[in-house]
Amino acid sequence: MKRKELTFTVKVITPTFMGGGFGQNDSIRPSEIKGLMRYWFRAVAGSIVGDDIKALKKLESLVFGSQERRSPFGIVIKYLKEYEEYKLDWNNLEKGVKYLGFVINMNKERLNNVIKAGSKFEVKFLFKNSVDERIIKLVAYSFYLATALGGFGLRARRGFGSWQIIDVRTEGIEEKTSKDFEHLKDYDLGKDKIHNIKGIIEGFKELIKNLTEITNLNRNYNFKTIDENFIYIHRLNSNNWQDVLDNLGNKYKNFRKIRINGVFVTPEYYNIRNFISNKCEWDKIRKNQWNFAFGLPIQINSREGIPNVLNVPPKRNKRGNIIPTTIGRFKVEHKNDYLERLPSTVWFSIKEKNNQYYAILTYLEGNLFPDENNDKIIFEFDKFLPLNRKCNNPPKSIEVQYNADELKDKVKSFLRGFNNVRRN
Image (cartoon, rainbow, N blue to C red; front, side):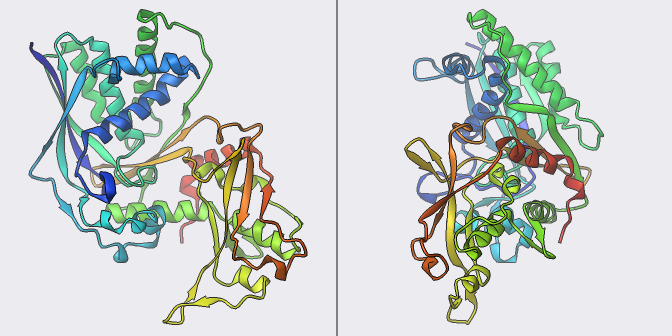
């Protein structure tokens, strides 16, 4: 049977760390592309079916397949002559780049085969001729949103693995549908208002509504995931990917800090040091400035500040440099379990046009924690920390106060005021 084909030519904007099991690198993996497409499909489809998981899975199976239903498409990767992998020199990266990608350095084997910025390749989607054109559209839009709002591989939420569609070709697909794909190369870069991305999302939602009707899932929900009012495109005064991520990383790092007596510190560090300084009692807590909406883990380490409060000599390595002391980490207490990892509510994606770079910042609306009304945020002290030097009854952990809505507002203010955030 004749196949329908949809081919995207893609350019890598920032270095991409894709890998398989045991830390190995497998170049571009169709399975990971499909996984990210599913993620953004759910983010939009959730606005139609809400928290009805069965309905969402039924729609998802129509587009991506399931254990009971074969996927309606396959993915083939073709590497072009501009495609290149290389070893990334982590030590010579700027501080802002390292801040965004700090986890990458913990997986040093990933540095050996990095997909280089500027590389080009093709992603070809193959469909049976009998596939509904609406399904083809949803596949195309899912891939578009994955490139427009997200990234691929390690640290994709923080600007690494940003890709950009530079060409679209079709074969065997209806002319009307093919014309709809022509604007998937446009990310509205350089414009004051975002038209194309929001237009794709609205078109996406319309297609989902069509599918709910033909599958008897037509319902009226009021549930949001992607907040279209919080997709921002910011122009960056940079002319290469490293300067872009350094700019973004420094602004992100500085936004997460507060100024106390002329010194910039994170509210997490300030509050925990404040607690220890006051003999394990809260004095003045900055409860609405936490950075939990940017994701967990958040671990507190201190070179001299908190060790000095505890009258503990700083640790030093063989060269005499101070080694940070582990103070503890924040966790979410959910029912009888503790969650140390939570995804960030904001994605950074980098785009380029005419040698000018842009950051697309997207806020994903939803609960910060599994149960915002009942979950608790706990700071667990490191078991080797000598709290008894300062506190009569040193606790193993403490509950911290927070307001979920105000934490979300902090993220939104970052997106709105990105260009006004100071840069070191």
